[in-house]
Image 1 (cartoon, rainbow, N blue to C red):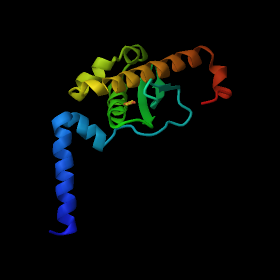
Image 2: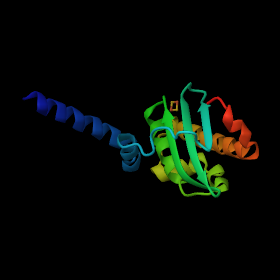
Image 3: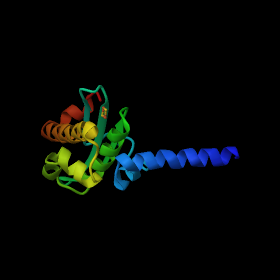
Length: 151
Ligand code: FES
């Protein structure tokens, strides 16, 4: 058996294991995370560290009260990548109020669920969205803070 075959077999077996635990949608967002990265001088920014010690950051671009772009970064687990990816997909095109109301369950539903032990990763993503919206609202009330805000 060649090395190529061994690698392909290993990959196949890893994917088979993943499919036992995660939905196709979650696997797709893990393999191809959407909206990964930062937005320069964002209109709203949230950084939240969960009790697990992992952090998600969310960056917002807002125009006319609507989220025209949203990106995320995380140093966390696979489900945190998947949750950040789906959370940013869900809030793009939404109003600030709609985004503020995105819940852990909205993210989980859109992902086709996550194992019980990983559901707190979606809560972390939802809380980070709320923090980014809070930051946007605070900065829109006191825009001069933008000039010296430390990210
Ligand atoms: Fe920390 Fe998933 S275990 S965000």
